[in-house]
Image 1: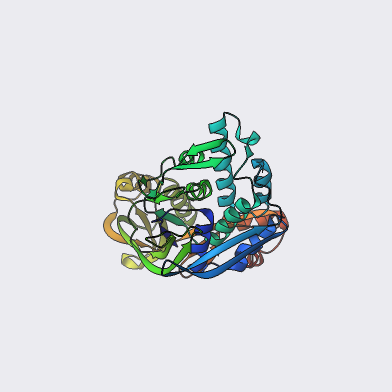
Image 2: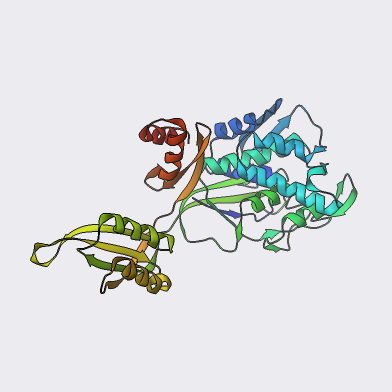
Length: 371
């Protein structure tokens, strides 16, 4: 799933979380992820509000521990219990940015304004919501930088704050807005998600969410818009190499397939055939990008002893897919997701089977159940 953000008035962690919930993310999935961190004394509520005439969702994070200062390593250790790589990356990015600003290693950073447990809820909550929505790509319109000043533990600082600017390195930004329109938490989440910037990518729109901020603006709704869409399958031009073989063993055919795949073929397979005079044979097919076809042609002819082959251009249509990693019996197993379902990676299952002694088919079911 593709996520496209339109942060017309800015972006904060709670606004992003609200927009994702409004677009269909499960509040229970978010709460379970936050609970997995071991954090106690917190409440997360989502309510429908009127944001300048636009119906939107606003989230409220309340914590009994209202301290705003603590070591970055403490928040990172708690987030790690949730098993969400995006949350880990976002908190690591915050620590690195603060460390660079104050001239100390990230492991020694002591967070001030960002050290509250509400930061943990926002970061882990957004990561859990993105996972629940099965978002694999994130894009955003340019971010408004705001202006003015903000009072911090280190005194009055210009807006955007130094930490925000450090976290926005590589992002596309624009002038606009007053006050702190982009928070460090919002910037860190976009950085951790590998966000691309520009117009919306081509996609089939599936859902839209509106996340409201806490500020009330006099002339417009203070919301971030989250658009979810399915990628549009794109056809790519590829070459199929085909050769008829009636004197090559199955072992050699299997070896050639492995060699071709290792040399960059998109796919390789064998089909049975009957040649002239009723001779049983096989047809070896290799699918490749045009720029790799010549090299793969040489490999196929050299390994099979063929005297020639056929080349045909085809249009390959690849449906969107993404990979998620689960853990069964103490070992990671990658699971590939497509529009029609999910399938565990065979090689990973073989390793778990060898270590555990359990049947391969049982492990495949366990991997799917662990999603």
